[in-house]
Image (spheres, helix red, strand yellow):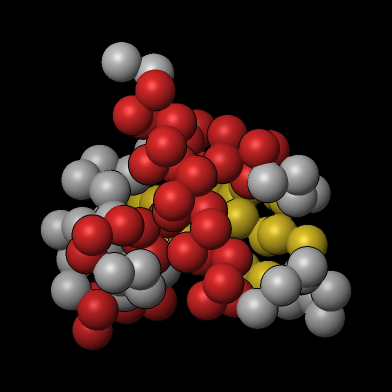
Length: 96
């Protein structure tokens, strides 16, 4: 159930294999080739945001089970997606 003080962030928003019309919401340059829920969780932790993880089917890709995050609302959604994507990309860069 959607709550006013939370926003929904789907894992598909970060998938570079998806087009914008199929669910990707970040620019291709910030998208991930294989987005994993653990990476998004780590990014949310680093941004200091409270969240819950849920497994579900995205409405545009109902045949595939994926994840979404219910994140506390501290900024506009597009701003959050950008910061989160940059953070996750930074984690991947430094973890190798």
